[in-house]
Image (cartoon, rainbow, N blue to C red; front, side, top):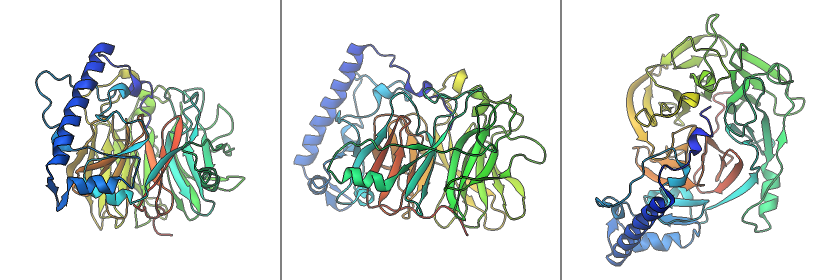
Length: 443
């Protein structure tokens, strides 16, 4: 999504003394309650708290957060007032990121017994790792886009964002030396003029998925009068491009945001006004909606509407359930409003028409907004938020977080047991037990 990086990193409204007092109060409350909880062997779904503690001993970067310990903070506590403030993220143990926050024992199944998370690339002066993560198993590389329209993205109405890639083989080689932090170089792609050539030609890229028939699927937000589009890109040089769609029956989309391929082979994508809100697209002319595109017939239709700002999209492996994040809280140059949605909605997908039905709230996030969305083979749902990546079980219960201490807009599974997390100015690799599934639909 194109919510401003600066908007999501506003400084705290609390004074330093107030913030320090708040963290001390919360830390004292959690620590005291946790001690009591561990002394008095309470059972959770058949497993005791000490058993959870024992399981965590094999995962040094994991911290168990007993929800009972912070259900009541008391009238004299200082509560969080700004969910978009990265200085007041919920970290009651004051653990240094990156680490795993475990809220429910089922998250241990996601992590596995030897889970780890490491920073693998960083550039503090450039938000090079924002969105559109795609894993190409043929080359063992991760492709991604820089921030488009936000702070440190070096992109605006007159300047474009870029697509880069990182070799996971190089990452694995670097990590083999037992380093906790490595900085593997990333390579910027030189795309043809249909998407990129010089600063006056190509459009902002914000979403991506696949590979689809060996090609990367990129979705662009447009720039100025240039239309948003869906394009296929060869992951190998010369990275030739085929544009599949750039209009709805002659009308430009607002600024396309994210895309996934349904098991049927149809493309589903979100269109939202962030290009206008971040001052690189004209005033919007259509509602914020979710569309279906059939690359075989060229048919384009709306499958869901009624959003404030529809953003991330994902399907379960069988394609029967769709998830859409609504990031209405963030309005770019017009500021933030915490009373608007920061919510993931679930839908049933009609097997014939693919219309999204039975809309219901799936999850509401406590930190920032839910941006990009992914689903694992067990149906757990992952979303990028202001503190990293949050994970919910299929029932919508928060079970854990990949806590990196800063905003993540998206993430992607990179083969079995590897989750790559984009963190704007850094990239992280989590080695876990959970698995993703191919995102290319039917070939």
